[in-house]
Length: 463
Ligand code: 5AD
Ligand code: SF4
Image 1 (cartoon, protein in one colour):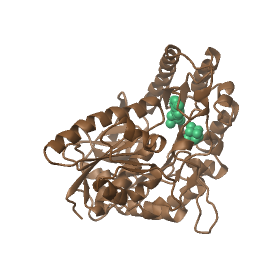
Image 2: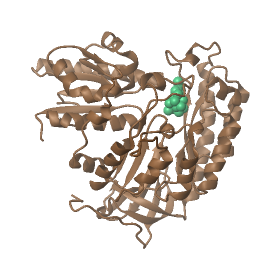
Image 3: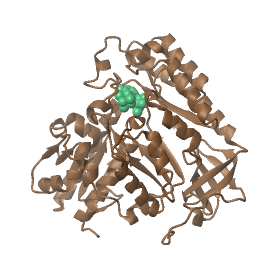
């Protein structure tokens, strides 16, 4: 259905927000809202926000300042623009947002997105609406599925949320408060969603959740399924050639998941397994529930199951009480694991989390200096990893046209984009590519002759 109103959704933060933004757009489409990439001219602007670090949350307020100007300009032309704040800042700050920023019509937490049509209707009538509840009903039962057209517009790779929230309570982290207790979607709904994506041409699915490997959704047999079992089942969906999952906690790398890395060719040899620190003293203070040795033992088991696997991680420097020796333990862990890449963060005190109350906060200059040293180590490994790809032949999933004519950008098993001279008609196909060179954040490759697993292209593909 083509709508008469336009919605612009801006996502901050993690992949789950990207997924949620899609689902919000899908839910608003039958209400007559067309999604637009341009903020100017939108009747409804939704900021899907992130609260993980202070910087991320601050971005929202500067964006709201800009939106207020846009809203006033539109009002002077007799046009009404509704502004909604969604995501984790909405959940964490609720009505404070209305006090801090003028011009916000709606604040909606992540568990209430299925109620958006009703909430927007109320805001349109002039009410300032706040919904940050954790409702009893399952939003996934109510959220609308994407149209075939929307799936196609989003490309041949897709995210699917299988789990939300977290019960781990790492002492630095807001997730258990903003996204709530760990909860897993039932298997049947996930299979249906993946089948629908595959049917519209999606070839690669990344299962997402804040603690995705804690997955224990109800299976068709009425019993809880592990993530490993779910992956086995999804690998059987016709058209799905590749599976990934993120983000995982080391403590939840259960046996069936490690076995999936050994037994499932569709499961890509790539694992983001955040460790946060290499120091046992810091890991304990962070309430990570694992030691450095536990973590290394898990890495070894996964490597044993899938020798060509690449690991990435998240690290926090300057957690309260972190001494130079603790930090050096993190540096040595980076070398010991040999990560393909990693995200590095300065510790950011988050209101309401236990670590924010700790006395020994690390000065910002020290955090900056450690961040730089850690980033240097990670960069070295990242460069070495890219260099190690040269000369190898990878199966590449062709995703989109490249910057130059005749070039297509694909995705290697290790997520790194690969730029290849190939016809655009290959988008959606998987083909063997020999890696010939490296760029700062990508690889260059040439089509090897043999085409592998060039899957069925749906009848209305292309265009
Ligand atoms: N400060 C800095 N980094 C944080 N992360 C989570 N909370 C904080 C915080 N308070 C990082 C962790 C996590 C990633 C998503 O964000 O490394 O794995
Ligand atoms: Fe946050 Fe991840 Fe720890 Fe859960 S496991 S509290 S999401 S850092």
